[in-house]
Length: 246
Image (cartoon, rainbow, N blue to C red):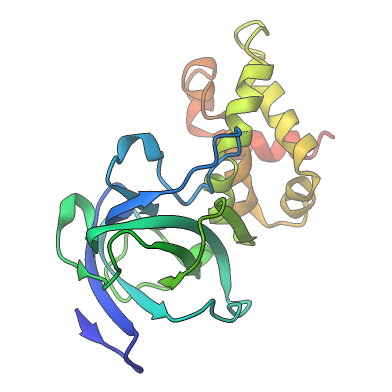
């Protein structure tokens, strides 16, 4: 860990694995109305005393800047293409850590008080997911005192982030096609993805192949067993071909 700039900003070097790092001893506020959590929050049911946040690489060391504000900060610049906010109540010693509680340190929150957390990523589409530092993507966590409120996706502008933010829609779509015969559901899910997000089709047709990632999120429930080799290893190509059919 080393400090940067003004007193509230600290950079943490964190070891990540399974594409995530952790904020521990904070209690996530969830609105029990069926509203989905932002995709950059790992399934909250697996973390009773904290939250895990998605990073755009499988593992290795990343730098995460944490900034504590006295009031709501100004909006981030357009270079931050994946931004979400959530609310937490601080435990006795809220702290940031890498996968499995490696590294990190306490972030200075007051037990029992509520805070708003803004998690932002820049450069996700430039990440190859596996290279050694320096990485093209940047990560930051901004924290300020605020009443509890529902979690929200604030910005979703990268193709890589689309995969994560489409997870809730993908689960709903999988339910919609569950009654179809085996062998038909992959294509049906891809078509539902393009129905829900016609902009993905437009971008793929414009040569921006990375936007298949959202459609992969929709279809992943079925393609391992519905597509025999070699098609199972050519999912992006199949999605591209479907994009041109509509």
